[in-house]
Length: 430
Image 1: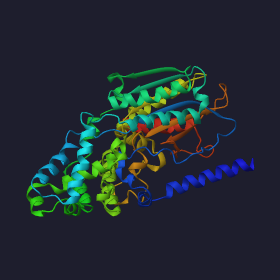
Image 2 (image 1 turned 90 degrees about the horizontal axis):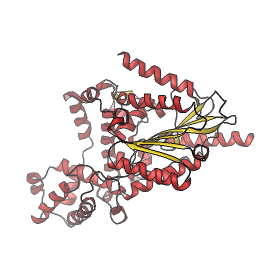
Image 3 (image 1 turned 90 degrees about the vertical axis):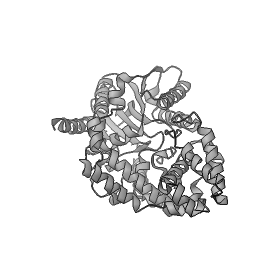
Image 4 (image 1 turned 180 degrees about the vertical axis):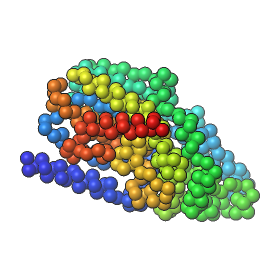
């Protein structure tokens, strides 16, 4: 018993230590964190989970996961900066470093040709590994001929993420009954596009505030001076801010591609510059998907249908002796507001101060790296046990919920369910 208590204390201390690190400290350790939603999935930091109390065992998992690592989605994301540098090279306006960067970007352009938005090989591996860890951490859920019900949005990178996860589970247990689907029929909760909330995200005033915020962290001229030998050419022919942001985006995305094994673009930026680019991105994600008070603090409710569906499906599955798992595969534009709506780890934060986000623990890459995921894991002693507990993993690390725990990391499902249903009802009442 003493050993168990000591283990729990050590786990708590390690989790608190991880959460206490500032973004700056984390970025100093790994500059890839500056990539925000382009961060390649880092895997769980918490290798040992808190033991379940009172003989409880996992028996059902409800999950929502983002697709794995992908290529950029815009038609000019690779070709745009390539064309600008190609023109400057022809004009003799590039430095030796600029010529080298032009060559590196040509490698990215070639790899991404006809693959915009598609899952990369690394993205497939990420979902195989997540599925394997889920199977190994909660073997009781996947015993025998358990039913695994999987759904994806209709986007190919999400479908392939789902298929890679299911393929891994089938290899680990060929007896599993796997069901998988991807249909517009389910998009009302798998990827709800709430036009009213979307129209409230930004207006002229918010756009101006964000523009002023970003300007404080602009380093485009420093990059231009490294790439171009003729600054007069830059002033006449180049949108410096656009090109700098495009190259930073390529630098961030590169970690998800096969080219990461050969080249980097992070050497073009200092640590301070990368940190500042990240701050601008972090603020963007908060404005659009967090509870930013300047646009009403309600953007997280865009995922009200998904949260309600999770609750309803859980209530149904909990009536079964062997419910298995419900897996869902979608996008960061769903997972981030869902995290905020569920108030996991304090991400329900409401503020009008974009400068305070990091200090208050709102850090985008901790939530939405490639292959990000939320897992609700349900526990009971046996089928007759009516006190069902749940814990939530955010990117496979134990997360804190906005209700009281039964024991560390474990919550009564009835408390969690009631809290969220009351919250959803309040929004509908408006």
